[in-house]
Amino acid sequence: MSWDPTGAARLNLTFDPEDLTGPQRDGDACVVCHRKWPRPRVRVGRLPDDAPVMACEECAEALLPAPPAPRHKPSARRATLP
Image 1 (cartoon, rainbow, N blue to C red):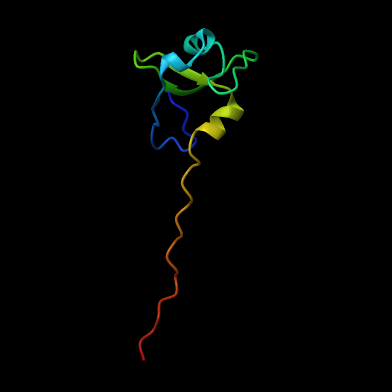
Image 2 (image 1 turned 60 degrees about the vertical axis):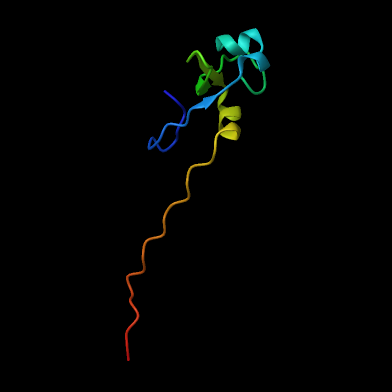
């Protein structure tokens, strides 16, 4: 499951495995900051072979786009014609 705070859509980034270290490719290290402990738990994308790419929560928030802004409700008041 990909990370998505709204649950409305799934973002699926594809990462080039050539640019990643072994632990990052195996999901044992954050794809952004390389931190291994605590083990990254947020799936932020995939490799071309569909293996998951993981990130820590802080990096996942920075890596993925912000949720869309809430829509404004139309005004209850309507303009009146003279």
